[in-house]
Amino acid sequence: MVRKLITAEQKTLNISLQIPAQDVGKKFEVVAYAVEDNQVSNQMPAPKSLQKNFTALQLKTEGFTFNRIALHER
Image (cartoon, rainbow, N blue to C red; front, side, top):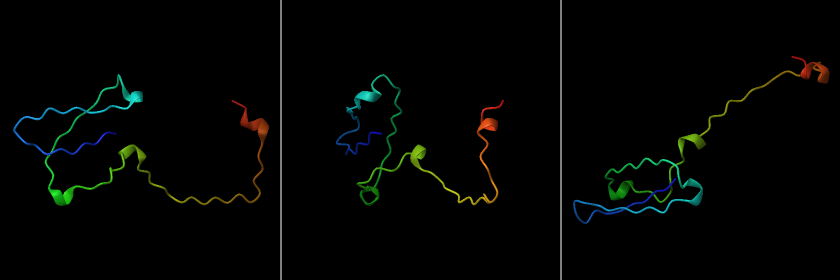
């Protein structure tokens, strides 16, 4: 993810981005929108793919035995 904050000095902007080597050849989506100075954060937001939700799960394993033979049966 590449993030670049710029200030428009005129109506037209020419933007150049440094792309990581592993991303050369991939498609990119560029989104531009105005932000107020008080909205600018120094931290990059976490991409949606990195945001995880975890749910606790509790199992009763009393009396459970692992059957290796049954593992490979189809």
